[in-house]
Image (cartoon, rainbow, N blue to C red; front, side, top):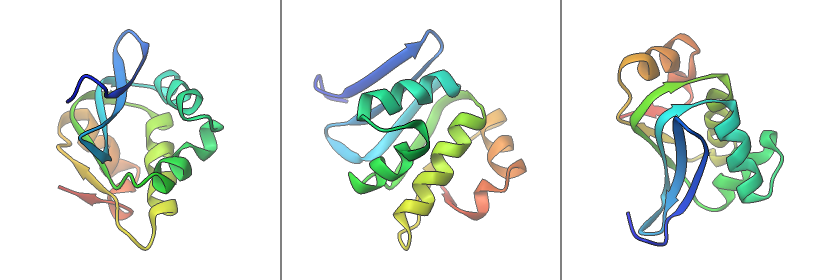
Length: 116
């Protein structure tokens, strides 16, 4: 990640960022809850329900969750919105394991995105 990464850290346990070196990837680290997602929405200047659409319009097509330990429904909604807005392109979710992988599968999000 470069020194100019767009970073959002509104929760002590989680962070979402878009890397300047790879603006097609949203990186999630730590515990991603609705408060982190709301902070991202404020950062991109969109209502929370439109954040996925805004990220898709900016070219985000990959979500890297390899550093995420926990995600909640706010994050699932963000990724579902991103996937819908990016169609016909398929959003890739990279590095899911543990609780994150379980949530993606249990919610059916794995049918909307490509898990890699």
